[in-house]
Image (cartoon, rainbow, N blue to C red; front, side, top):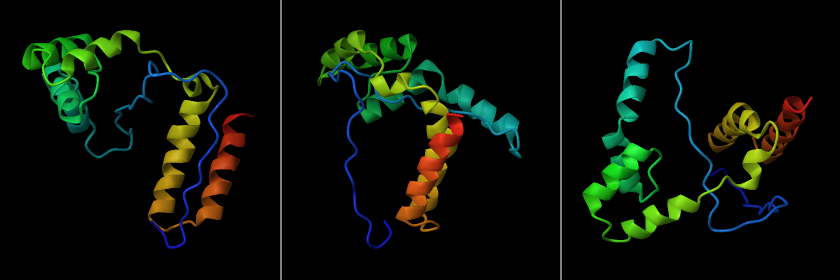
Length: 142
């Protein structure tokens, strides 16, 4: 963290909050400008195989992202060590309110993530981060 960095709690978005809300999904993609498009696509195809998604879910103690991966985790763990409860909790998951905010995914991927990367690399300060996030939000909501 850059010197002088201070965490600031943001207020929650309006809406209901409960334990059934799913986390923000992650995405995998290949840049059209990549030098290794075929290899990157092959890796994504490998990663998305049920046994590999199951291994990631088990390693991170996360609800598996596909039905075949869920079945693989259940078969491997036999529901022991809390996995029965983790798997049962997935049946009630619903998207969090912020996931329904128009243009949020675009802002997160194209504005917020790069801005935070610059901030954490010390390329912009907290004022620059705030400006990038605020101006970026205005840009995606034109």
